[in-house]
Length: 321
Image 1 (cartoon, rainbow, N blue to C red):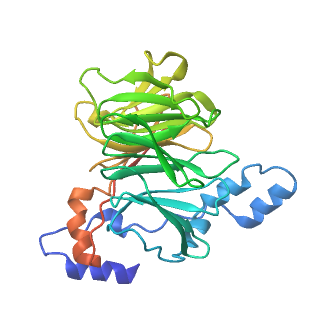
Image 2: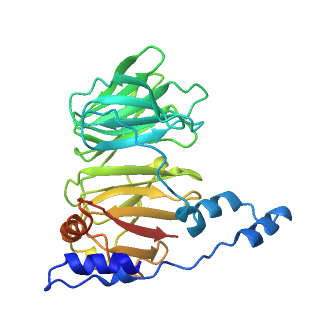
């Protein structure tokens, strides 16, 4: 840590102040393996695996295994593991879907997606057969890819399709949001298209992300070119259940690039473009805790100068029940 501090000081201009969060010490361990193992042996730790994966010990053990180089474009826009976790699919602006045997560090397959513009998202269908996946792109198409037959089927066409989500209990149902401010669903078995939501209040808000509550299949949240995360119920999407926003952003229009529930649906993680970090209770919209840092437009120059590369990172915002 001391070496990093000295490096930053040497590369910053004299008139630039070093952000305090760069000098913060790493957090203390709040998960202890001996105690956790003992509790698991006597049946008092049903969440042992999830708590370990979220611990500082596990994060510190992360390391780069290999480089997977195949895409012709520089940036990979999305990736997705299959249900077994042995295969990884990735998409980029080259309009190709690459299937990786990540453990061997080798490409297994590569196929054309059928899209005509930048690909935004790829997801395996969570079925017993693992050769079907869906993709969406800036051309507004949502496509179903069959790896066995090496074919791509157009399921729907719309404004730029930003993100997809699967229904937790009905994996054949695909939900899509996009720049046209609409939420559409389609059944991959019958190709029946249904419009569930049109975000028009107070202004038409392009949608960037959608996620279902993993333990409540009726609840989902959406985000877009607005500072608010909006939560709906599938049984009556015309009625907004509630909306969430940090207090100081209620009068400002910020872009939320992605939203995601945690494993049990008690928290929502939202990434704001060019903003700080907030921790707030869902049941108490007034309270918000703010963590400063990761403002990509401000510190992109700093990282480029200090470490020799550019790194744009959105803010991470936690909303908690």
